[in-house]
Length: 528
Ligand code: SF4
Ligand code: SF4
Ligand code: FES
Image (cartoon, rainbow, N blue to C red; front, side, top):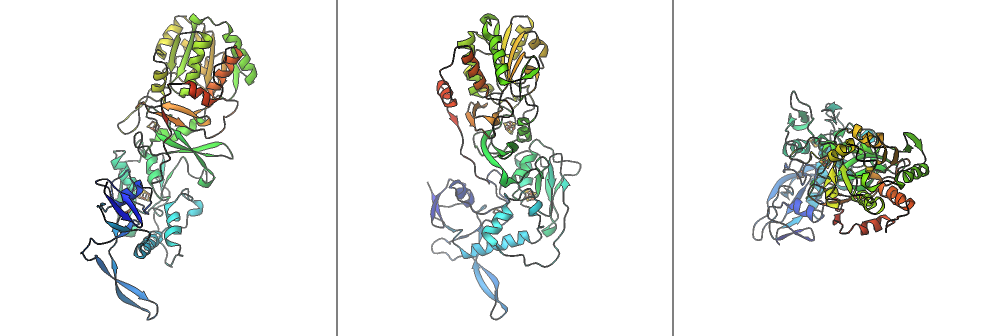
């Protein structure tokens, strides 16, 4: 593999790599604003300048500059090497590049930083980006000097509403054009562009349009400063109070890798962020997925109930046990859920076979929705492939509804909250429905006994996406209300019915799930 030298390190690269991309792959950060590994190269911020040694036998490219001489109090002519943007510079075998080790580079980075901050407002105390802002980080790392300009800074529009999800602050914008390129290249909607020149330039939305494509929150995510903020997250939390759990979006069958950002003090989830996975979602998520964290806190089933009346866990479990004690296997249905993890579904599948002795297996899930060629899948369930892999014999919900309407079931144990169609009437035909639900919906509404199940953010779980990749999601917050992981409810039911499974802990359940699809928890993708 060809390689080049970056400071003291040998960096391998592939054909077509730029210096910054090869360094990024090797885990080395060359400071940058406008470059993003998932977007085209703009080379407009100049933060990534590096010094490149000339090939042997060739003179170095030098620039004539004027330097201030403090002794004579005059500018004196000098020469300095011509620096090059690492984001645009193609890597070649044997080249020698200086980044951290060049005093010319250090001076250039400090000067670029000073230029970018020349007209920048002192907004940090009220800026949502504070704590994860490139301008703050690089000021500390590469500049560290006080502002020298004494003039009034250039003022530009603030709090411009770009659309239903995004607000723009032109004074904070460094015009790196990441948001412009993202909209054009990834979302395929060139709705943003740059207006004016020099220190008057700003980002604008096309006339007659709003920033309203299905990936608007990614423009805020790629913005390296606080110029674009998400209406959903603005002024809600300080990022240094948040912790992150690696997770998988449960908004559709794509299974985008994400981080769940939550406040450990209040056990509240504030946002999702994409986690890099080149095979699944690259660097991105869609708006529906990014906002799907809200379901962790909204419309939840948080207490057990019997015949619609709230009750204690113990009383509901006792009632559920009574309900299933003499359930005739031939007229007892078990409904798995494409909304739930492999672990929950496996526990219930085993329960159907070993405790209830039924073969009447079905599966439910959320209704289909819009899809596209970027990420979004019309299947709005995260684990359809997993349920089909676990129980290929399970039949779709429509067949369950049909059989229920014909009065073929006296008992049903249903995992999940939603049905593809609002089949409340079919469910109501069955006298004894036991629901294991995370959310209020048709299933909990028609059940005699409801046991509150913990959501995907409250328990470790495995989901198989549309590509057949099994992905693990890690628990962020503690189970809300009286909820417990669905597999744990199933375990307690099986024990109460005197047929305990061979597993007790999650790890034992996972071991019992053999052959378990090899699950991956991709390493955290670094910020780009
Ligand atoms: S709004 Fe953000 S991403 Fe867009 S050009 Fe300005 S600084 Fe860059
Ligand atoms: S495409 Fe699907 S999995 Fe990815 S973020 Fe959107 S809803 Fe979530
Ligand atoms: S990263 Fe902006 S010029 Fe290279």
